[in-house]
Image 1 (cartoon, rainbow, N blue to C red):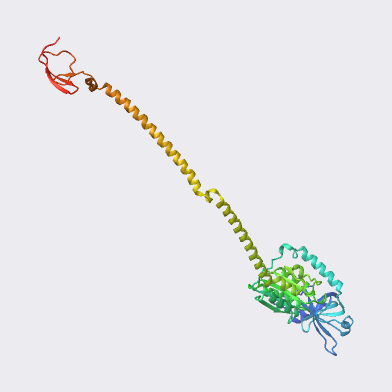
Image 2 (cartoon, rainbow, N blue to C red; image 1 turned 30 degrees about the horizontal axis):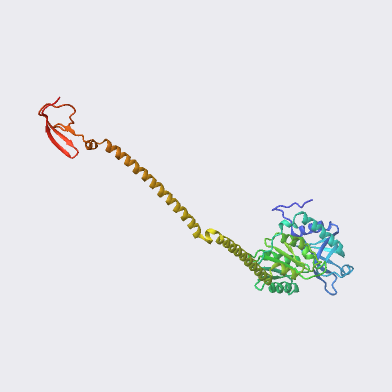
Length: 402
């Protein structure tokens, strides 16, 4: 039955502690898997104290057992080992603390660990964390390289020295953390998150040297893998040697077989780039020379054309045509003038033939009265008249008529 309490009738601390103790005591022993984060064993002490850590969550529980229980597990259990524990949950009411009391301790076999990694691999693959389309491209020349590695490790030296040899101006933001043992996955995860938050870091390299499968287990922890998948900055995995394959290799945007290979993939080679530039300059020179040769050939063809090679010939030919046209125009105008002159002569001859002067020239005279009218009838006697002849005129008076 649940404990009946109220603000007026609260339960005492000891009462609640006793009830929790009774409830926990009713729990049976259970098999628990975890990683030994801390192991404390004092000579002559009757108990060994272990901090058992959950590798997929930031959670740990205290565990204790007699030395003989721990010694029964072979090989000797040390910090960082994964173990299976047959333990009874216990609540100590006097201090209000929870712990596990181990009755049997075993190593987690490598085969079981690999099987669990395969199950985790299948789960992450189904979620798309290994998909090629989510991989981010590594920048050609990063402004700054984030490096997560062990303290004073050979892997760090390999990455930095080879990167500097390839590109002397490369800049590193290095975080040295534990890369083996109980806290390795959490330390590497935190370092990756710190570098991902640094806007000056263009690529992150996670590296360590080779080791056993157990040594590389932190780089297959689900917590670390999801942190890498959530990064906005491209991540390069350079764990161990060519044959090593932690799950980080599948989640990372690029896998490098060794730390040295990571340096080669992250920064370009200055010598190679200079060679590329020289080759590019050579190709451009060839293209320009070829283009100039084509234009020179085209110019030579244009200059060889008659209109440019001997332009005066075209002018001379046109001049001959102009002279011909001028001559034809002159002949046409002359002909028209001759025809007009002939017509004028004929018209003049007709005008002269019809003029009164011509009549006078033939011996005729024109008789006019005082008003200048031509006399066509016999006038009255003593009428004054004017007679016009070829040489002039004279006056006359009519004396008679018939």
